[in-house]
Length: 331
Image 1 (cartoon, one colour):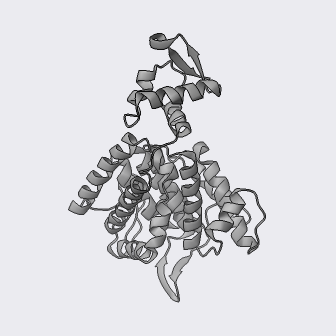
Image 2: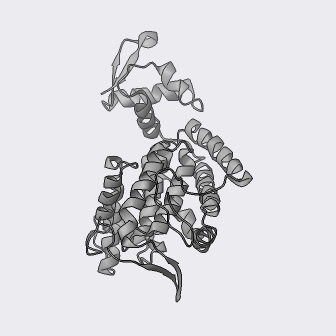
Image 3: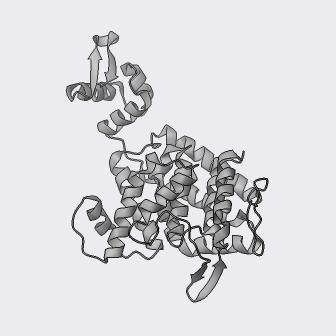
């Protein structure tokens, strides 16, 4: 499909070039193992307050990478619809980011149309033609140095079509494809502005399609902490014409983010957290206290009974039968 330093080849038979290294294999194995731990700890969909905190952290970190000056506290205020003093552009960037993350469930990670729709929301009012491919050649500068000349505008549609064909049809692990997509999209640089935040957003969306935990995992915060290494990995991959170095870097970031999620969530879930989590698992099926308890092995039978009593009293579930014949169902 795509790229090297001095050539651009278009053709659906070619996949983006990268190598599977021992480091990549070890990182994939570690990530797969820790995702299992996340699921068993019921963090595949974290409690509401943690989700909110992580979403704000993601928005803050991703926009900070792009030069936004607003603080966590200011972004939190915007999320809460409070008035904030600051540069109009920075405030609009935050509002747009909130809007696109709220729209996440309606976006298809394998659709180029969805991709452009997301850019349109993210960059609304910030660029002349949000959601449209650029119509001129651009260079990417770090400081005073031009580090990358993006492909010419007339090739963009074909290059992005090829990239989405790879994403939809290739047999590579989705974990790897998300990293490859992130790098290749940055290389192609399809829009005049907003490419960096789109690359990070779209990798999250790709991962979310297979692993729900990634919807609220603040990967961008880990990237922000290692911002220089992030750009270095992009540059080294550009220099070699292969995304291998960038894949290794992003897999490390993903692993760190998952480890951090586990480390900060050693506190017990509240009864509301458990009830909401179980609802997402059982949906509208009938269940017993024993089945509820089976999903939360760290709590006692008495705690399970209190949880279900609370849910009944607050009209979250409907109870039928008594004692050993009791059955429950979410309303």
